[in-house]
Image 1 (cartoon, rainbow over the protein chains, first blue to last red):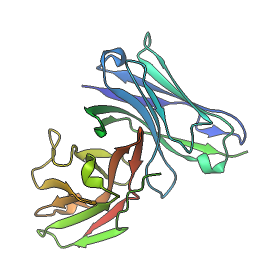
Image 2: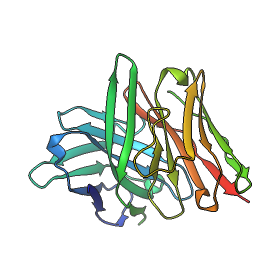
Image 3: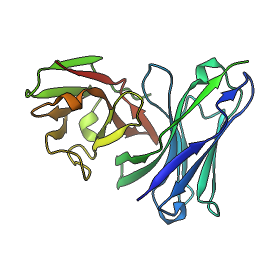
Image 4: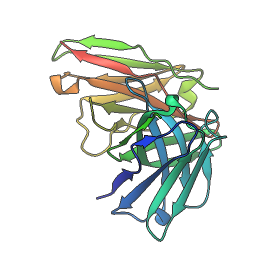
Length: 125
Length: 106
């Protein structure tokens, strides 16, 4: 059974860098699928942050691309999120998830079938 | 950038059919999926590739996608189906979510 668990500081100061880790159990990241981050501000909808594949493809949200880095540590079977220059608008529940991306030409399906429980990050001084 | 539009809320009586729409330019030319999210919990995938149900999702959940609209249909809606529902698609190498629909069963 595949499980994902987010971890990291619950409080980050404005202008600093938010750092989170997603530990994956029950499946080797290097074996396949896409792996990514999604966030949800309080009382609001879901926002995709970015994803990467086991083969090295990485995609980021255009609105966050300049501040986001997603990296992977296959030896620990975990991946990480760094979001720089945070403000109060970055306060949210952050989820990691496994995804499948398949298709051809312009007809692709991307869906997230396993999610972590989420971790709350508050940006405040 | 690509946008997906959902109604903020939908109400349904127990046992009736609930339909939640998701609109986007030529959405029928893309694959859509749907997530259910209950308060305080992580989203759960209920429909992928327009019409497919993951293992463990009840048969009362079904999906369709044509033209500019994808639809999530819940037949014989139960109280436990009350939740927020989000549609999602892949466009120009990015994931796009709809704004979400709160389904109320009353």
